[in-house]
Length: 340
Image (cartoon, rainbow, N blue to C red):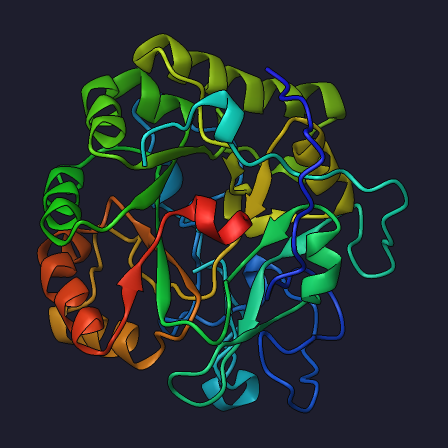
């Protein structure tokens, strides 16, 4: 169901995606040049896949958001210097819900209609990364990937393609730390886990839209894409009696100007990420120490963190991870504060 715009301006926060020259994310530094990336461009050294699923449909019984084909070229880490691509509150009353502002003549010189995979380049520990499109370009389409680089705030998000027993401990840890999160769900998750979805809402978390079938959205026509969003929203409302939160994450982190514009017209903010790690392979989970080391070294002010609910490691370390981040001086905020 479309949401009506109320004319709220979307700030050009520190955001960035898709192709060509990069703008600093909250930093006035020398521009970093990255090549446009796709899923297949990444090495399999533990720096890939934030979305964690292969292109194509997700149907009951398939792994969906928790699985991805890793056919990356064998790139050396020093060649990419930390590039990562696609490693993936209660609903507010209608009067207070953030609404994306649609611009009349957005520029599209780098955000191509075909879309590219979301990519990041990392610098020194504790500093914000840069993405492969400028924050200004993303903001034209109500897109975000991180927040204010001056505030030690973290925005937590989880991609949910299927359930394998790790969501409950994740929710337990979030509740213990009073940490709000956004859960991006596909249709299969809604169909099979309505009680967990209800718990997410009851405990003050947002539930965002990850499309119904997790298709490669660049293969969809406008009508089919709108239906992918609409079907998730309808089933969520049927389950919870509430409207889905206005946050959309593209499957595999792929999107372009056309896709972002359509999501914007449907009332969504497109949410990428500024920190993720390879947590999605249920058969090859990172050790606790490896995960903690990566996630504490690369945390940064305004981080929009992407984790997967399918990760056993995430379920087991989240309490400790949140504690470590708090000890580093960070607090947790809902997605609504980022987009406002």
